[in-house]
Image 1 (cartoon, rainbow, N blue to C red):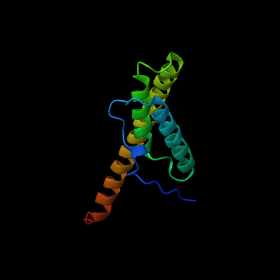
Image 2 (cartoon, rainbow, N blue to C red):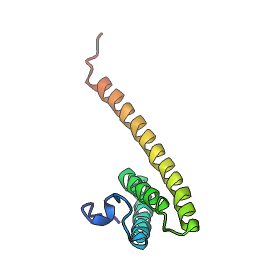
Image 3 (tube, rainbow, N blue to C red):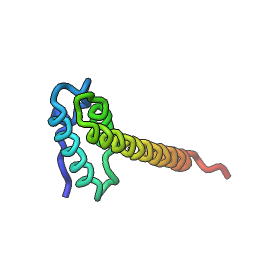
Length: 112
């Protein structure tokens, strides 16, 4: 079952400064996390979505008015999501590199 995500929806946009609505940002990041988890079964998760989640958590962790326990939790989660993004980027780079090598090998005329 494929999930269609409307990437033009404001919920997917990175927060610029966190704004004055931390509860809205927290709601948004929880929503994004559930989409990431739901889509994770088929394609290993969307790196772009993981990156947006990481940025939301970073913005939440930097809000001075947020309760200390929530700030600390957001900071820890932001670090974990940053690792997810980095790991997926590395895997993507490996896959792209291998694809380029294989394509080059197929397109190179055999010399005999």
